[in-house]
Length: 198
Image (tube, rainbow, N blue to C red; front, side, top):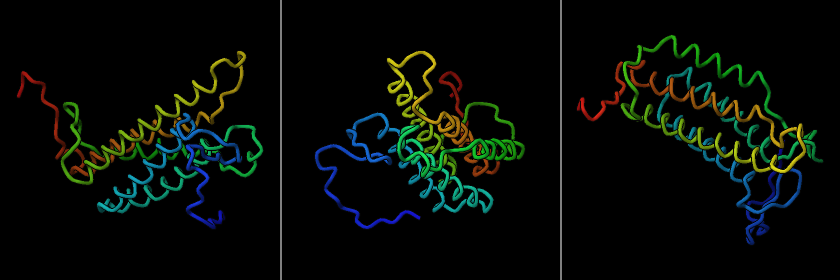
């Protein structure tokens, strides 16, 4: 269990922060941007849960919030560093669970006859917002991989557990199908109408 003694330390007042291995980096670094966006996503999922989800979705959302703490710690810890043995790296089974949830939710949905606009119920709208933040977190993680891999010798392993990217990709898809579920399994979706059809 992590013990938090103090909230305000003053150590970040000059625009620097510490990674999980103790190394200091600028707060504007791609690594901090990636795990910071994951933290934003986790906070948004707390808002989603406050909207009153179906029980099965709510149970999975709290598990996903725990996963996102794992994922944030994973991104905050360079691979192979001194803190390696203390970090819960993301695992394949966490990604597989999201894929099973996507398949189960999709089987309950009415067919979509057009692109779906964010909206409908409040729960659906917030899940669509979570979907977009998950995509932004994924993009931030890709920037981290590309930035820290640049200039390295051919065949150098990535500086990030690439399961983090896959997890965020699947989570965005899951938020989409759950958003449709919260719109009467897609029957109350707001469908996009191209300009010439409006």
